[in-house]
Length: 456
Ligand SMILES: Cc1ncc(COP(=O)(O)O)c(C=O)c1O
Image (cartoon, rainbow, N blue to C red):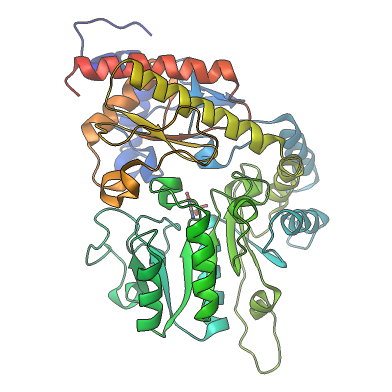
């Protein structure tokens, strides 16, 4: 896309993407804020996409973009993988909803049981939000305790119970629209502090479960590693509380068996979605048979009601079976992890070479960049999950207030340089080949130069 020194980044962005600008003007009259997901909002307008393949997508103005949204994390296999496309097309011709049980749901559930260590039983839902909602309701039924504990900065979807402490400021008194009576069932403490967790469990016998994103909130903004997970498992067992892993992002991404298989820590319940359904809508709760048994009607026991029109929808099941069959080989996770590791390392080499106060960090196939960084520099030869944790994991520095002007400018500049980069973070797929990563590093260099030119 052409760039001239006399025009601001925002001017160049608006000039290069007239089709997106025009669609956004229209959409503002249709949707509040003009978009259909909070994270798709961007200043001055978001990009509109026509189609995608592999690591790339194309916008309405014909630009080819390298994609780091990867379907909000659901496309570990890249966009439109041939095996998933064929499975969905074949299923489409056989029917999208039979209002009945079907073979694909059994095959899908068996794959979850094969891959996810905690999965003695599985129940499909319509989304990740529904999965965490179900896991928490099951935990209330199993333990007879009404409350749960979560960690600051950990995102578990948008249902009422889990909105507390999800975003900065973490100790805000209320969440708009969430009744105080509901919010008080959630106790939130900072991440990576086992003492705070144990003190909270001791202080409040009504807490029945602990839920977390096992590699850190907002997919690793403040990284969590194995020792904390092992400690949490031990504390939960000792205090007779359930441990719930929200592996909606990490499941089938970190390793074929998710973070729990990688770190060898088995939760009681696991929420899964995204890669689970091969890029189509779908989620599930997997876990201990005696806990999921509360979905069954049993004499003398309460039954958790669970309808849901799109549970184990045949299209999602077909996509899920095709995707998980490939995930089971281990190859997609390895390739995506390697791509992200290359990106982190090459970005840190660039930042060092240009003496820029930026750092790249993250684990597995998740990459974050932090501007204005003044801490210890990571090793550029770090592996998939042993890189530096910047600022010793300080929540406010790593997941605190963001400079939204800089955030928007980086997104605009990266799009102008052919990359759809998710603000200060991105995820890779197995289609992010070395040349794609190297192009992204070049785009970063040009983009940060553009930000610098604007005093950002
Ligand atoms: C860790 C985590 N849990 C739950 C959810 C909610 O999943 P969904 O968007 O499918 O409702 C998300 C979504 O991004 C997530 O990242």
